[in-house]
Image (cartoon, rainbow, N blue to C red; front, top):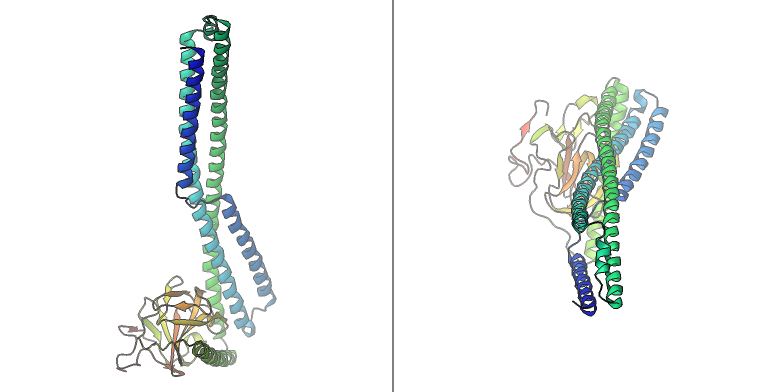
Length: 416
């Protein structure tokens, strides 16, 4: 082969290589992007966790300022509920960190696998180069030059030798760089695994704290029953707040209907029936007169209490509508109110957490919160109220057939 042909062959090889690289780059651009977790994503969650810790310190400071007596029990219970909400948020934050760590570790394991495969390929290439040099002898480069039959051929062969020498050095350099990359990947992966385990340990500790805080909150409510006068004052305070809340609900519902009418929209008349707001069918208290549970609950109960739900059960919208209240109060704790049309609302109280906000439209059966024992509550349950034509009604014995009611198939506890 003449020098001209060799140069042409090399130019064709370079052109083919460039074309292959271009095709590979284009394919990479066209490939669908997948969401990847970065350390920055986890650091953002850690920033949120730091804010939650600051909030917790403030709540602990406020709790210390309250005397440990019955006259401040309601205020302490309210702060304990906020502390429980804070711990619950911290648990959620750590669970998100763990999930992202798991994804980040999976990504790094895949990157390490690919790097190790590349190292094997690079090492195999290096071995092939060494074997080729051994077969040709240590003066293989010189033997190529000595075979030149003219000065022009010699210059061409020198150019070719330089390319071979550069290629040999690149193979060695790439192999060294790959080994460094693998060691860094292993170190990074091990660090992520250590941090993920630390997050799991932190999660277990926070869950224990949450259990202790819930026990303390329930203990505070039980303490109120120890003195009749203080209990009576608390009952009066609770009932007054609930009546104030009911009037505010009526006002907000009227405003919503007026707004919809002004916009030429339906008044959200929702004649459909109700579904159970939780999966449990166990009734601990019904609407009307009852013995005050734990010495703290109203003796003229305005709602239906559903028990056997714990702190993690989902709460569903009993009927489709628009959320008009989503907040905390001393009596109801974390509670949500949904408007279903003129004079028709449902209220869900004592939640451990709320999942909806004011103005949000929810379909029947949509999750609006999680059960709990916030507010004036002696244990985890859902306090459920139904208002029709501006009046509270008993969902267990109201509707087309009063003997059946809206909610059927329930079991009454002996104290209901």
